[in-house]
Image (cartoon, rainbow, N blue to C red; front, side, top):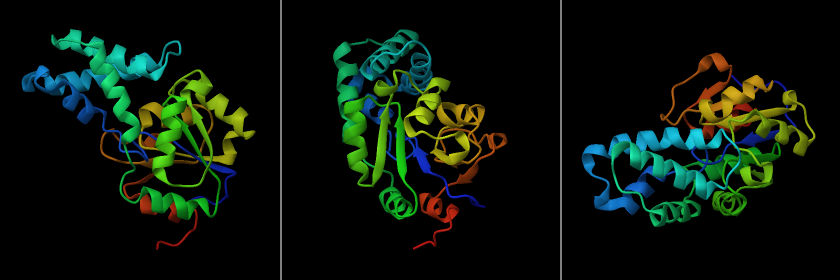
Length: 226
């Protein structure tokens, strides 16, 4: 378990991997009684599917991804959609903080190798959320900067060009095979870490190291546990 070669950068997905991406809680809070309990689970499941669908077409600002996915999910389950609700959910996002242990693990790893974020957030949110991590990131790349969202392959092409690296010079870390590791594998990134947070299925055939405790991440790079 671990990597034999020190990479030039370790690149990270942010939301759902490092930041506790609590968008379901935000939608429940904002919608309140207008999201009946009997349809709430279906609404949230469908909304997640629509978010990734909205990310795979032409680029649009993330507040539109949130709005369009909520509108489509509302129509699907028969609840009222209000634009103000979508804006309120979007504005909650930069208040979220890291999962337990993330800041400590990142600071330990950052002593050994440069850290980079590549996120589906827009630039303003990416900056604020990265600040919430309180860790030494060399570069923060937003979807707005790239003009594309993961899992689009062009996101990883942009990453290679921005950092001036080849796929074998990176380790990519994400909690999402769907958004990140499938595309990373296709683009030739062999060294990958799946942080299994329990909200996607393990796709071990993609060839990543799987961890469930973020404290194990520095260990993969030969650093001792604290």
